Image (cartoon, rainbow, N blue to C red):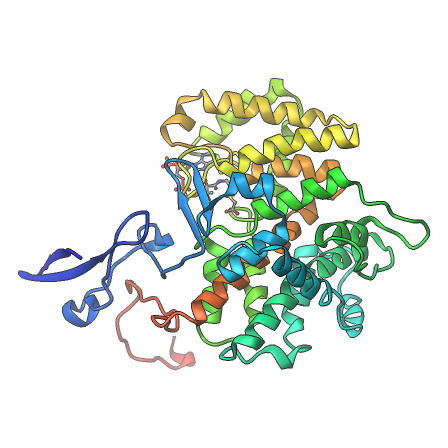
Amino acid sequence: MTDAKLSLADKDFGYPVLSGTVGPDVVDIRKMYGQTGAFTYDPGFTSTASCQSKLTYIDGDEGVLLHRGYAIGDLAEQSSFMEVAYLLLNGELPNGDELNKFEGTITRHTMLHEQLATFYRGFRRDAHPMAIMCGVVGALSAFYHDSTDIHDPTQRMIASHRLIAKMPTIAAMAYKYSVGQPFQYPDNSLSYTGNFLKMTFGVPAEPYEVNPAVERAMDRIFILHADHEQNASTSTVRLAGSSGANPFACIAAGIACLWGPAHGGANEAALNMLQEIGTPDRIPEFINRAKDKNDPFRLMGFGHRVYKNYDPRATVMQKTVREVFDALKVNDPLFETALRLEELALSDDYFIEKKLFPNVDFYSGVILSAIGFPTSMFTVLFALARTVGWVAQWNEMITDPDQKIGRPRQLYTGPTARDYVPVGQR
Ligand code: CMC
């Protein structure tokens, strides 16, 4: 362990430099305020490690994403979402028996309390499904009191299993509510993802056959979204959880954060953008707008805080588009527009210099739309999958001996102390 030196007001201070198993070292400044009376200033946390974690590693320069050491490409090709969920929660890939047991546990938690159906009816029919997700997941905190002692590992795991298991049911019900169709109960004979597709697209009037190619593609999309280290929504879940808050409420906070267009809302925004562009001949106009400092427009699905190379999830996503199109015998011309947009942007100096590449959200909208989801459901699907990462990170945080309530400080730039003037004298 080497020291980092800081000179401040003619005094020298030393801080330990900590090394992880891989990735940049961190300067441990926990004692800095006590010793120097100064804070560090890092809006957006661009140079700040907020915690230690064993879950996910990203090398943004090389375009590498590992979960517990396994490459995302290998997991997407060879494993299932349930395997990845087990891996993130427990640290190792499950053997056959462990996987069967885990799938059985998740399957048996898929039903919602029947009173929650009434809760849905309180929303306007045209409510955005993410608004419904925030509300309903937050409301779970009022339904499952037996799994909210966060200091009991068994209760924590029950809450985690409930969240992972109920999220597809909640998401499918949000969709059904928006289209005015009856809610579908879970079908325990199906896989996690097959059951979600049936609850979403099945109707009581006729049998629903899960298309295995679509089921596989959807499962892969869930894998690609399962976790992504300390992104905004995960940090939100950790921050909310750091006060000891109810786990269901913490995940509702994560859903709220994910909704924004700079984060999970980008998949919806990316497809809307492709629709607005329409045909490839209009791409240069939009590229010029994205480069114009006076225009707030950005290429949605492009750029990333951490990846300064191709997002490895976008590679898998692009391949999955073709598989879904083949399986469903569709060919959405927007895919051609997306491919051409990527080609033109990646050969443009602006995007090359700023290292802006397609991210996970660039192609996901094209696939989800081919499967039949309206754009408003895209971020809901992201939330469903990311719940696995959120609960794994939340569990890791609670068992971390260094964990404290998250409480950043500030650089105050407001008025200094002044006398109060009664309202009549102002
Ligand atoms: N189109 C045009 N210019 C861009 C874009 C873009 N998509 N992204 C970044 N830039 C420019 C930006 O204007 C800035 O230029 P300058 O240095 O001249 O001011 C530079 O690149 C750096 O951008 P930044 O906003 O400072 O970088 P950031 O790390 O704060 O933001 C980001 C990362 C993902 C929010 C941003 O790239 C963005 O808004 N992308 C579009 C939205 C998007 O696709 N989000 C999904 C992210 S991946 C999934 C997820 O996390 O949920």
